Image (cartoon, rainbow, N blue to C red; front, side):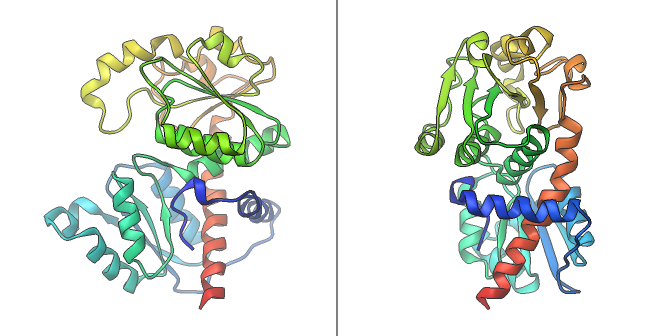
Length: 302
């Protein structure tokens, strides 16, 4: 099995990953076979995702190989499918961070080993699982929680989060400017599982929110639009005033990197309601659980 899209993850599958993470947290350790190798094929820069995946595989007893797409033959025109056929003949699993979601799908179709989506232009499913696991730790459950995603509600993080959150029984409020509409396909997928509202008014959207989530206003590849996007999203900065619209015990989340003073203030990011650093630490835990789950599923299929 591949992990390519949040839309393919059932409640049962997600909860099993969370259970494996709980076992790791409780000191119950599982390992992959010695020599099991994960390739990290990255077309985009990364700090947390790269390091957490490498560390996860090493802590599981395997090995990780980082492949910068810019220094591979992909940069000279080799097809995604040919690259997948070769890489998958060398390793046991691939985590791919690609600009185009369609390229990821093409890679997975040609791969002979499991492929994990480590971010594309449309989705970031591993991030969503880390986020929801953090909510479960902080609130005791995801079911029944109201999650307000504030700012760029068309972002890949919003797509994955709303789909997996509703699968687990959460309500999602997408809060952003009218010019930044959510992706229709992912909105429909999320609404098929639960309640998702779209709001331009921050006060209305954050009313009753248990979780206030934001992400950068200028994603990778959008630097040329930075000035315009900053003006567009300025009213949606997560600051003390905006946080006051949510519940008093609401938690604050950000997938990082944060641009302090832009989408979020330092006061909120470092404040008592923030679980951002716990959220970041959980990437390692959840990625260990994902790798182990896919590894065991792969062994059963052989």
